[in-house]
Amino acid sequence: MALTETSTPSIAAPRGGALSRWVSRHAAILLLGLILVLLPAVANEFLLDQIVGWSLALGMIALSLMFLAGYGGMVSLAQMTIAGVAGYMVAVLGASSLPTISLFWPWWVATPLAIAIAVVFGTLSGALSARTEGIYTIMITLAIAAAFFYLTLQNWPIFNGFNGFTTIPAPHFWGVNWRAPVPLYYLILFFAASSYGAVVYISRAPFGLALQGVRDNPRRMEAIGYNVAAHRVAAHAFAALIAAIGGVLLVWLNNQISPFSISFERVIDVLVIAVVGGLGHPIGAFVGAIIYVILRTFALDALLAVGLDGRRFQTIIGLGFLLIVLFSPDGVIGLWRRWSARLRANGGSRRL
Image (cartoon, rainbow, N blue to C red; front, side, top):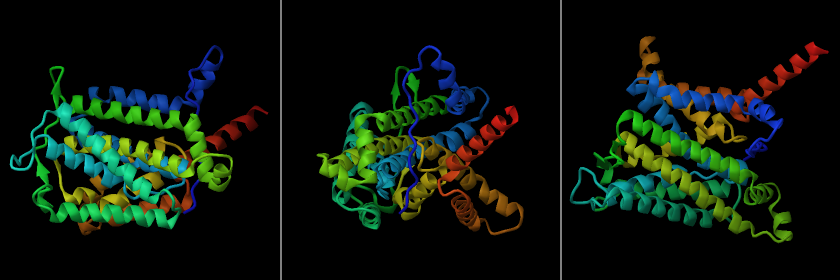
């Protein structure tokens, strides 16, 4: 699969006269961050939970795929599965509506352990696919996703079969009910922003630069002394951490998890989100997620309003995906960059 060249913005702290240039380069992201912080003051519960909160949590899972594909050249279809492992472990180790299965451990034990199990799962999945490239990586990770889906679908003693788990409470600490709309929104926003910042930072760190070298020319990197397989496995471990946290947040947000939360449709959805947003920049994962969630939420009503079968809403999502990829192979972020460059060029020509 052809991947667009990844551009990595600098996040070094601006000094002196560089402050204005740094702010101008990051104005769009800074403005977006400010809007997201102030959003609960004007938004209702539906917008916070079902649109923005859902987009941010889903965007984290897509971000883990973007990190692997954009910086490492590895297209993994197991990221939603890793998120599902974390979500299922939260339900099994913590509290749910099934006292015969759930262990009801306190959240501060169950949640970190669930994330750790998911990271180990993602690391082992990465180790299996680390020595492959292209279509072989895709097929191995798809096989892992399929195996876990059917395991949860058919296993009743641990995963409760196709019914899954419901009534999975978010934690209470510091006197705050983190399942309330505003606290949960800020919790998701915090981890989404942290994940974004971590990906941008690592992309500029020695490990990230070496990983991009492995993406571009693995034989040359191996010839000069880099362990290509180790870098790929480490990248899978880091991506698994982001996906696992996103999976836990989705479970707290939806208050349930079932095999259909990690089905083939959901697996492909994450790939679509990452590609639509753009693999060239971490923010693309969140842009793709908000586009997907808006289409998924309102396409059904739009079809019914014009007298069409509401079950065709997936067609609208598919058409939107095709149009974006057709006109911009590097996604919405690519469109934005070309539009911004054209504006700057036109502005410069007017000054001349």
